[in-house]
Amino acid sequence: MNVDPAEKDPAKIRAALIELYETELDLEPTDLTLIDIASPMLARAAQLDAVVKREGQMIEGGNRKDMMVLHPGIAQAQLNRTQAAGHLAKIRGEGEGPKRGHNARDAIAARWGNRV
Image (cartoon, rainbow, N blue to C red; front, side):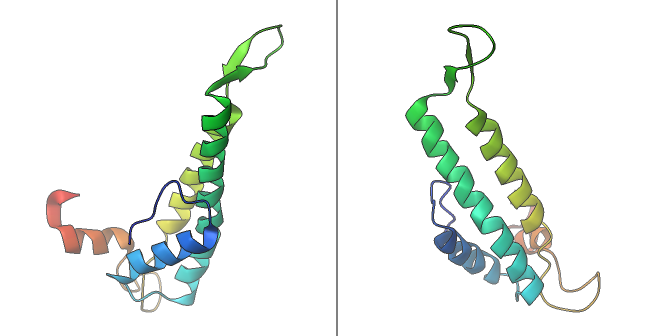
């Protein structure tokens, strides 16, 4: 299962992320907490994408009549995705201490080699 970038349900995103990470890692409670934090962020980003799609990338705003500005939902969606990626990058898998297990990047490299 892949994580659909248009998915708006945090529970479905959480399930997809867990399935994705568990292909290479044994997730610990702290890893699941990071997924729990990132899932609503990704869902909110998808919701904002839908709003931008409905309202358009440029909307009326600014300090002059008929001035068009970039939809603020675009920047907020990007910020949500960036913050979610930061949390997901901390997932390290099983083990003890700072060197516990191997992190997600190592897991991906182990699976896909130099193709990433």
